[in-house]
Image 1: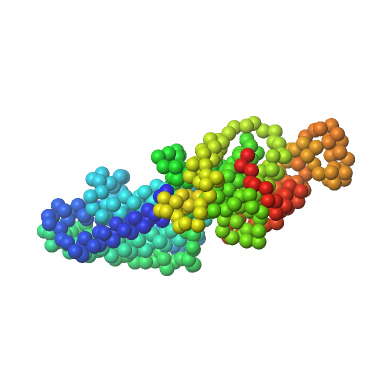
Image 2: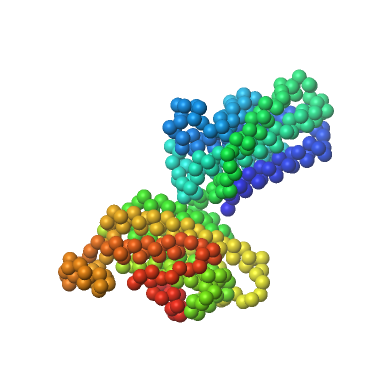
Length: 454
């Protein structure tokens, strides 16, 4: 799946290709030189457009500063000047003329990749600037400032080729006056580009690396690719579920069952015995995956005791069922991997399974938020007969409800235990050892029984 850093890496590679051509070869006709200059303008225009795209959510995040320009951070002020300076050179025609002629030069291919990166950012936000995806929800204005700093480095690399391009054009027979009008000396823009990285108060590690494609439809031509697309769609759906009360509990149960399957199949693929008891080494390797599968199993059991009086509308079940089918196809539990090294095809499957495990940790965070919202709003019910006896003995109202076999609001002690289970499964199994079971709803972790996929 193509991500934001992938597209920027493609842009940098095309810029390197263009620089190599300038150093190693000449233009053979004036038309070839003018086409290259036009595509060079197109890349600069793409830099300006991309700058505007990164400024858009950052400025909306600082909406209170819109009327006080002195409050705008220096990196944003420099970015605005850079975009305006480029647009004064390349013109305001939309689309830019270079976009109509195709991608015949490395400059044009670099512009195409950079515009695609800007479009990818746009897919994560609504027209009003609100996040549409969990990745976008995690970004901050500082994240976009860091992206502008990276864009400043790219702009410096592009602007450094103005003089070589002008010399090659003159060498090919383009009149000096024409070259001077098209490449009038852009050192002032290079100065602005150099300011972008230097105006950052500190370096951010994450930046925009998490932004990837949001698949509207899963690709079904390859099972491994389909598995990744389905998991990304499920993460998106569970994030949207945090603000949607319909079918919330049913979806939580569905995803808890899928959490069991993802970790169990991944553990079996890496050679783990799902029927073996937990050991002291459960916090490492495949044993950690088994421990996490059992944690998801305890969570699934805990969720089965709740009820919610809300309309049902499934949007997760189809993707979850498809993921279960793909897991059985790619990593059947009955065929455990031996000690032999992975083949290239198996390495690809292992990478997809590891990605699914990571996505389930993200899903657990979003679902934990949804569960907490339901519990705080008093929307979770459970049969009184399912309550522990020690709790019922302390509450006459619960005792009466148990005798009458009624539903009651889930007590805080029960929802709190389930919330702690969500905190347990939200940690990556390889990084953090499985925590000790919590309360009545978590059976002992030394249970040697096989993991149930039901």
